[in-house]
Length: 306
Image 1 (cartoon, rainbow, N blue to C red):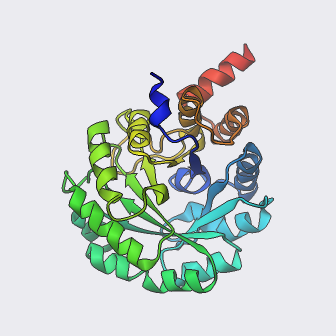
Image 2: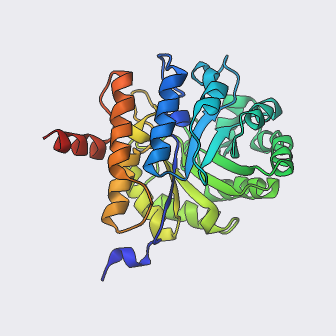
């Protein structure tokens, strides 16, 4: 029996490298390099690219060039360019930058919410009501991202009910898609099954996405576990860009090249050119002056160099 016969036939990959991947980099990356990266990813066939973040440069200096990046990219019809918007000021900047989708975020962990933004989960989600309403008024897609859905650096375990509660709140705000994110990379397949199935009781499975970090090397296994539940949207980062600020020295997002290699092997269609993604990964890694964190990407690049 073919195990992939029960898995989704097609998967959407949301490429988060230009935003989530680069935001923790210490060295200043010129807007031109970010623009080149987004353009390469567009050409590779991604239908959704998280390109920028309109947060205060005081908090995330790397994203200070977001307006310049959004103005400089070569857009392709049918591609959704997403930006992170923490407040109404960020939303207005996103609107001026012609973003297709705005992303709001909350934590499934009460301890994480209190430590990071000094308010409860309920209060943090309520703060996004204006952004959500404005997005709907202007016809923009609205995506909600739930951090620490599988574990928290402060409180440890996070219950499936806690995740479901935030999913419900984001659904009520009118989110078109909701990400279930493993911020510190502690999830394993059994937990992924449980959390995804519980989230799907509150929101359509077809609009839920998995956002996994590879801190403990479980990213690919957790994506396979999500596929078994029926999740067909995943976030990943070219070259495995992105550190994890809560786990010293840990890798961040699962690498796009690794995810594509898995899906290709399962016969699952993504519409993305893996070779072009490998090129994009090598391009940005060379600029950063280090080897890509993608095993498949590095292996394919080495094989090509032969």
